[in-house]
Length: 162
Image (tube, rainbow, N blue to C red):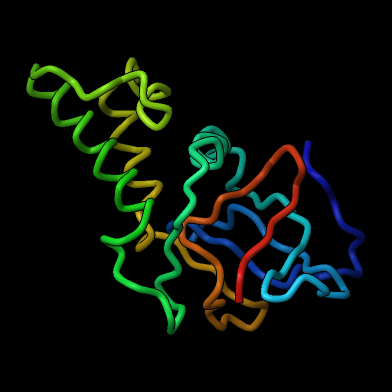
């Protein structure tokens, strides 16, 4: 399974989807890659339920993610996340209505081209930034963590910009 931390070390950031703890971040004790903050992932109890979607989102390699709480963040509509959601929504809508579908060989669409519509709808809900929270141990919002977070479950590492 995933990495486990000694009981004496508390993760610094909790990542919640619909109030379900998906993962935690244990920040490196020395941060020397400013403006990037780096740490190790610790599996949360809800990761088992959402693991496939976490992997699918990470595999999509969204470049311009969305940090809704960051003071310098622009409009959601200007992000690659918005384009990804729009492409998946177009695929779902076309399949649901029997119309010809967009380019299913597209790297973003290919994993979903044969998925049941219910599964695609569930994934679209999963990548909705409004359903995610990144908070510190005391519940303060972490502004620099993109929502949803792209979690590398193979390396069990995470980086975000402040």
